[in-house]
Length: 327
Image (cartoon, rainbow, N blue to C red; front, side):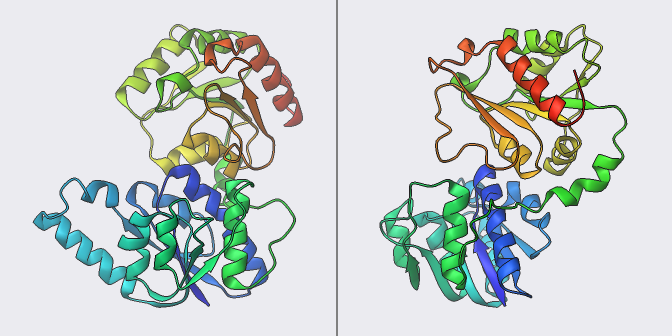
């Protein structure tokens, strides 16, 4: 049985789809998947052993010059790839009109998705042959697991979902020399940032612990923040610019992680690493960290600055003790 998954973005949403694949593999021997995903996240599906072909799509980039000759050529090439195989089932887990019209509609096979009352954009349901009601008041991972179960005809397991990608990086964990923790300090919204002074205080509290602190970054302003946090401290390393796979390898080898509300915090959860995610104006609700040893630390006032470095240091110590590395 071959299935096409349509889940194009964002990073967290793509990661939240992985446990549904693991369920399907356990329920249907021999099932294999192809996956249509935004080009920036194309590495993620390839980490799951049940995915054979990743089909990158670039809707975000294409829409900036939709009718230009190069974009027309790319769109045609994508159409040919997505239509090359007739699928036993196509599961649109995105639930948006854009992806349903530009991706799901093109694929050959029976199209499954959420019904009018379940999809993020109800109109998307009009593009599906079979529409499934999925209760909204459950975590995004569980919603997707239920959609796959109903689309492919098995009962959703009652156990916690398994991303099944940590083993992809296991050999890298075994090569790690000195123990380290990672601080994910970068996010897109200003009001989701934890103040640099607080990061700096946490880094200083960790100085006597024996752990190295690693600070990844993606953009130049994030590198500059990391350098300010690390200034003058020998136990803190500002990492070089890394690919998503390289960041995942670093996360996979970490003893623990502290993060703000960002896609990489979901990657940390998918890799089964102990993580403390800091929330201020956003509510973890049904989209917070899902997995083993995931802790949400929510500001009582909704302001990130009111989360103290002492509180996070104490929580981090407990995580490190659970991994057998006392601070």
